[in-house]
Length: 112
Length: 115
Figure 1 (spheres, helix red, strand yellow):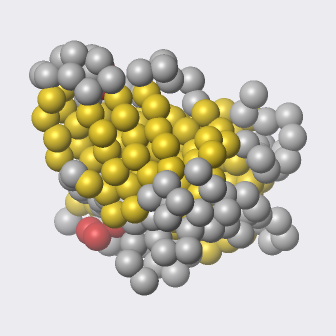
Figure 2 (cartoon, rainbow over the protein chains, first blue to last red):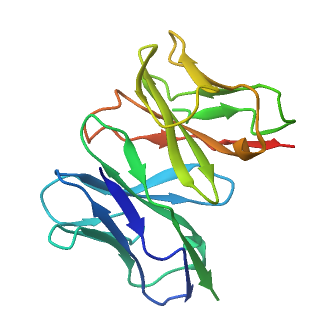
């Protein structure tokens, strides 16, 4: 069965510092990977997704994630965070025809 | 284009009561999925509807049910509420719910509190 592990429940970081939110998955078949962001009192928004092709995917607001098949990871990175990036981030895994499985979430807290 | 809307946004009920939550998908979207979000369990999949039929189901008791109407609007019902049902219930819609170009768009959620 597929599963998703987000290794950090909370990540505090200072503004303009780099950040990495870690995500590992397990699956016996090919998967498709997503990162969602949830701001306070809002639903989830798709940040970026890996379907196939280049293993490095980018979002419009400076985040990027790299698919590493050998390490079964899909870590999310940003070279310089802003206060407005404070939110909860969810990694998710999907196999075609099946439901999407979400990780437990990582709360990113950016400090001034 | 309007986003996914959920009503009501907040709800307070007592144990034993039942509740109905509503979700209006983005116009043209035919797939609607429901999720329960709690601090302890994270996001858990409840069920997915497509063309008025339940297509996928998560591991929730029969007290949780849903339906979808011909205009793709969906309702979720929870009967005999328990304290543990307190959660944020999220609805997500997509065009057809399959294929990886088919992105899910989430509503703001309904915050249910059971006293």
